[in-house]
Length: 467
Image (cartoon, rainbow, N blue to C red; front, side, top):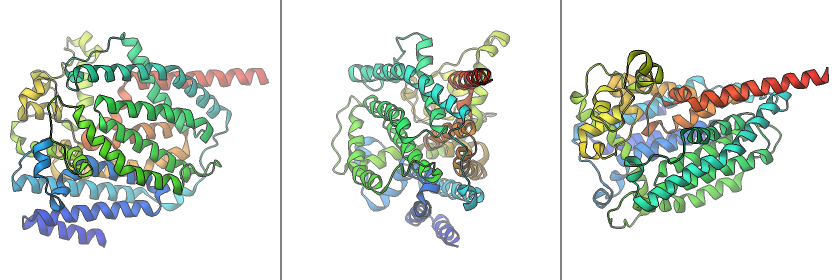
């Protein structure tokens, strides 16, 4: 009933061209979703974290002007001037996206499913995978750390833009490949439901790399890294594996108290991302959320430049389509060319909405190595209209509800869920297909294959010894 009222209020503002009414209805919907999740935060943590990411990367740019004069922020950090028609489209897109994420979540969620006992984490096979993934993490963490520090050094010496224009790791390919193994071994390790003592060091590794990403100017990676860790702590509370509380009242209070300070510090990182002098905003908290909400502009630009896009492109499946167009087999068998990022051919011939859009809107920025970024809402609308937004958001909602269930059922499918969740919360500023496309990565295939085969062999050796 409440959602119906919010919807009526929103469309009243939409058909009367009242941006304030639409913005308030969108904010009320967000508050409703957050309140629903907080009531049973252990069980609804995946929905809550997605809602926070959704507000941070999309809603802030649309909501804050209703309550705060952002004219000085636009001058300081950039901002597009859209027509009322485009703004109405942006508001409608965000309202439908958040509404159908919630509907998809509620469609799957059943209280009784979340009360089932999780799989036996002390089973020998589970312990084998846990030990092997932990060893793989420990061996690959120094490499992942080194690769991150290499980027930090480049940004500190050459500037943020250089990382996208000039950066090419000085390490051999196999070293960068090994560095990528850390993250997937980390997700598999967590899916085996280790004890708090066992998880302490791996979580600290992951947080360390997330913090270091700040020095490269990638605040989004830092925020999403911390959100993932918070999600996992609450998820373990709900699984009740006999370890006690993974995060309690003190932890929650500490997060709430540190949030304004952390967010203000994150906004200061904008100076790392530019060589230009910028005037300091009086309100760092407002500035942070307004700037991070820049991904909403991708929705607006996609609407304004709709007729400029090449025909026949399917941007929702862009990563997968381009993978088959440019992979090594296509190059060897059909003479295909390798992908050339930041090229005109990539913008017009491949299936990357963010590349094409940046080339249309800001060609100089695109050709110099920059980009507007992606947004799953924009991709869904471009391919399937408002129905596409509803469909993809509904599917995301289904996954957000399913992931905690997968973590109870089996650690392999649970690890898949954790990897997908890490991509879903990034979807407001990334490609819609990423939660699936990530499994096309050679890193993922190698890590899963190694741990599966090695754990089976170890289990067979134990059986032989016991017999």
